[in-house]
Length: 324
Image (cartoon, rainbow, N blue to C red; front, side, top):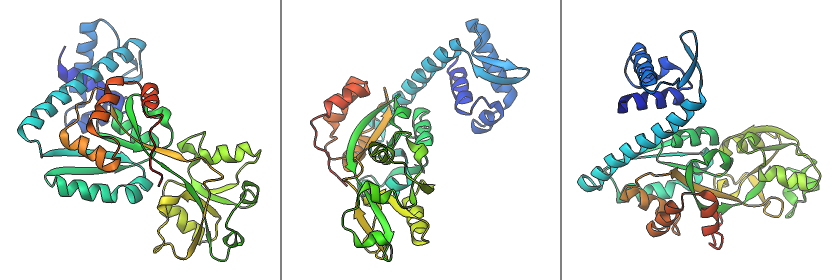
């Protein structure tokens, strides 16, 4: 059994059983990967992948267990490399962050500016996507941190730490009937077409909960992952926007009217996560604390020792998080 073989089977899964794509990503040949996978299966006496002809079709039950252990081993190997780098080049390295458009545009700029000033020799990379894309990047080690709010069930393999709460606002054009109201009821809001975030982010989103509790169904005419895109379509008169309050800029959005909707929808909690068993470099601990000051290194290490997100939630149950 070779470390290379474990990396191959892990990457085959990451590439949705497409051996050609795996070979391209690893800068090797498709026959070479297929041969190494077969050799590993022969050595273990099991099939890791089911096949139809030359094509891989699924991961077998035994294969799932092998791949889970392989991912743990590969994670430990990466941690060993990080330990060495921490001692030889403490202020150099890479930091990959996966997050949503709203977090990247409105929550992270000041944090990243502070981080770059503190660690100018660390290469920082931002990956934006949907919750499923973010969780996948973090799970396979392509992102050191996942910063997300919705669809927490996708992050069960990560340590997820609460950073802050955020509320929503109703956004309309100045000539819209709602613009004259300082307080909008859920019944009134339900009378208008709505422009909001993709509901696929979380089937039990706070927006859906708010309407469901009132026995109403929102009429969503347009959805997107970007708050800036949503504001564009509000300006076109397509509907009433329901977006994160922090994404409203008084200067840039002075042509719109924002109405607080915190009484209609419960706040959401943004969390930062990383793979269980990860070795965090010193600058990684600092990034977490820059983003969420209550997440100091001792606090993060205490949460890492728990390894279970249910226990971590209890740990932070009495922590008063900031609201943005």
